[in-house]
Length: 272
Image (cartoon, rainbow, N blue to C red; front, side, top):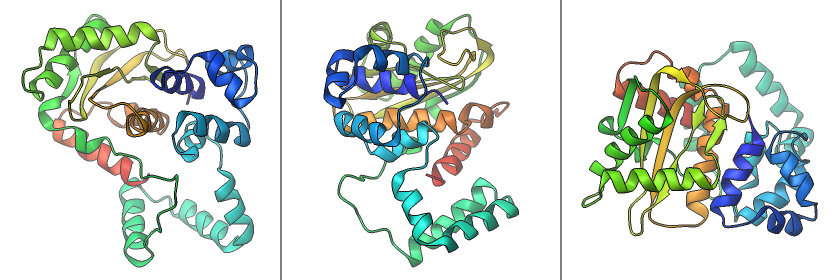
């Protein structure tokens, strides 16, 4: 998982320059640049929390992308040792994603989660998709072709939207900063005033060479359109990066039916 690429993605969409964000969290712009480019190790939990505050996203999202245990979880495990034992029991049983979803459904029913200020639920990706906006095993020559296909599917869901105009919007955002978040996934996106959030997902028949932060070829494109800027949009982008780190591209490898793609995505998102 590549935290730096996700930080750059969110920073650019939040309208912050490298210098602005560095100043706000009390570090040098050179240090933050090294983090974004994967030269330096991921920041500490405290610094990630500060970054999340400035980007207005839940700290837990960035912790997940960085593969760090949040201070809240660490504190809970220290206070309630039995929770750690339960986690070991789950690991020994090697529960699948679908089985863990059943465990979570039981917890949600028996022990509803109390809302905590600042911990807004992460907007899931699956409801923004439909079978018509899932393209499987696309054969294309380059990333530009994949963007055109994604734009066509997105435009069909937006009355009056021209696919060529939307494709240009995706390319324009790509020109500001690459949207590849590692693990074979790119999340191109465009702002369309007044448009509801909508997504298209494209799996590739053959991996494409790409300027990815982790050097992995591109295998999956998740294109997003939104008509509003702000917290929910940034959370969606961070969530896709988290899904990438959890192996979304690997899980969809070889899947040939759009409906099965959606089911696989829903299973992965059920783990939250």
